[in-house]
Image (tube, rainbow, N blue to C red):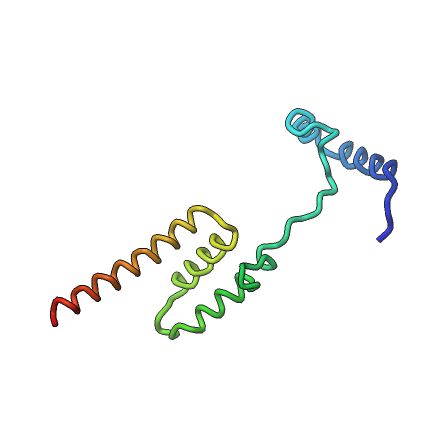
Length: 122
């Protein structure tokens, strides 16, 4: 790709700034500062391109999980919950990490109590 000179970048930045409404210009000047403001920032990765530790996208994980379930076993709401939790975990959102860890703990608790009941009935 062609390198753009600093003068050209400054010219384009001023052109973008001048084409904005006065309210938006005021916001930039007060909150960010013209020197720090960058109208040419690179966009962030779209969520569907982000990958987890297993190198899978959220779409791959959700599809793989739902295919492991019987069709009668889930509804649209179920699938929506799976997608939401998957996105939260991949984005390392504390709320979803907490829900995941609680779910794992609760599953282990139920299995432990089930095993204890089985031992008592013997």
